[in-house]
Length: 539
Image (tube, rainbow, N blue to C red; front, side):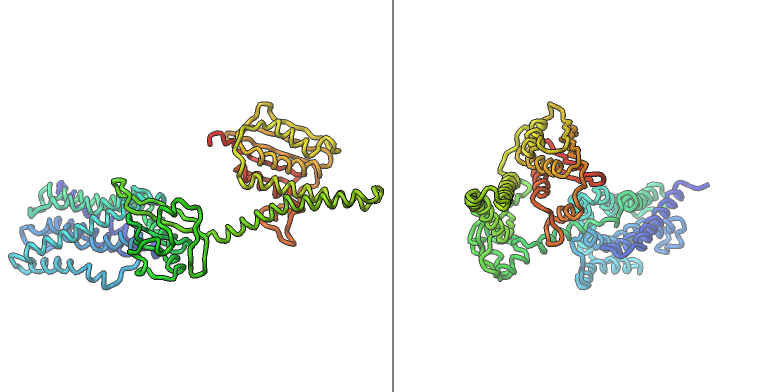
């Protein structure tokens, strides 16, 4: 009959084999950060469980002494050795350190030599090994590695949403919980139920923690180091000038972009006032929209963003500053403003002059009619560009809009009554929403004008309520919008070989974007323009 002690020892052996098996499965994976030290950790800890279990079942297999006084220390001995690859795994897996030099590893492993020497002296029969003070120091050092690695795993998994927090907790419990349990083992006969139970419990906790992290939480599926390394890459690769300053506005660190653009070094900047490098302190930057900064490429305009840094007591201890280069953006805005003014004023005045001279010519001349028609078309194009600028610039506030009335007004604008097509409207009378009225009018006018102009016989306008807004459809039975025009619209640009025939479709696209809506086309049979218009009343 199997005794409870034997059953517990066998259970510990099985748990040890499970640890080794998980390590083997991870070993079969492709190369990943922390994979090798994790395999070493599970192999050492699992082997310790197996050796201790076998030594308890068959004392002659582990010939330390005949009384079994050393046996209970076997699990702790293997645990002590396993903490070194455990800490290396935690550091690499979380991205805290991706590469560790051999010299660093050697120095970090030196205290473990003390463990080997102490064990050797004990086995050789010396009553005392190394001095107690040295042993205490080594034990505390090993404890710090175990707890530090657990903290890194839990903190990193908590910080990055793509890694379940449970993974960090289950892994962190492995060294901490097993130590707490195995520390109950004392220099007693291993055939006691209490000693065997503590041994088996520690082994099972280790196996379950590693198994849950691997099977349930996808250990090594998506590793947390991508979050740590990704943050570093964001700071390193960004084109923004990044500064960290203390509460005295002195620079603590800057990124590589700032080093290059300011033609300096980290050493030269750290500890100096921020104003020495950008001519502004953090409070002035916080209050400014754009600031000029003299760089290696000359004077550039930057958009400053200042974010305070606080400690756990909510005391502001400094700030992070990001200066984004907006020189080209500001130039583009200036060019657009000038061109818009010319289009709105100078072009309109020139068209009026052109028309007045044309009207003074022979009214019966067909060429005069063509001149006047072309002048009106150019004038309408200018007015259309002006309307687009109004809602694209976002200068209008949201208001409550009656969709039925807005559709009717847009139909009057495109002169649908004078067209040779039948226009039907099916919109509920009490359908209102909060949105940008100029943008909605622009979208409707563009869609309706295109439908009325190109339809063979019918145009239909329908609207239906959606949980978050209104879905509007404008359908005609015309030839459909050419593919190249839609391709140009999707590409977001125009070229000599890929372009639209005017501003109509661009007006539609930009207006829907100003509505924060969705736009789609179906040209299978005629053209159906579908617009999803969000209701922004909650905003």
